[in-house]
Image (cartoon, rainbow, N blue to C red; front, side, top):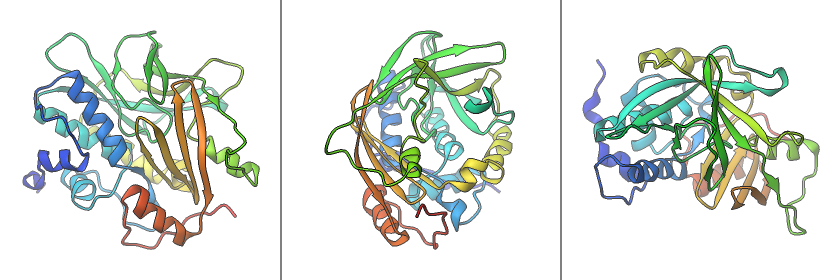
Length: 302
């Protein structure tokens, strides 16, 4: 039997370091909860590289993230968020997300992401996502098609076709300076940009698609299991990400990066370090608050 009695809303708010004392649904509170989540709970896939298999069970997710102070990937982070928002009185629809495969110019045929559509006592709805783990929106997007919406980490807009809604991000400029960290290989440079959308010849890039038909929490188990069992990128590439209004810090494999948001259009790489596994453990503790109880077995960049 699923034990929901272990789940405490205020402990979740403590985990995300929520300063807003209001418990009445509002856009301000929703923004504060989202920013608290992405800046305190890492997006991370480390369990796929030596840890235990993840289970699609809300109390288990709560235990791992709130009590054990681990992170999670999109289904866990947004799954826990939808529970918290519903308890506060928000109306929440669960929508299936689909990764965009740029080289094939098409979306993943099987859903491998979870997104929330949130509303309260108004006609406006907000697309909400604290679980993409890269260059996507972190604050709620007003659910209006074609409207440019600026956030600390970029400028976004929503579009749609017959089958789904489409999240797009405006191309950003990388600020290059003399003191910028140097890469020793094309692989290091490529992985630094793996969390960015980026085609030089077009001003907007597709981040992911969102299905138009709401689903249930139970429906998400298929996508949750697919993400950890069959998503080739996640299976081959350990990722850890935290974001704030000022910067994003992240691991891709054993490479550690810190990027500063100069403004929504401009990024600057401020730190780069190729790490041994022991150095990874140290940075995971200091920068992400992660203390692993298993030995990492990851594909390192030499």
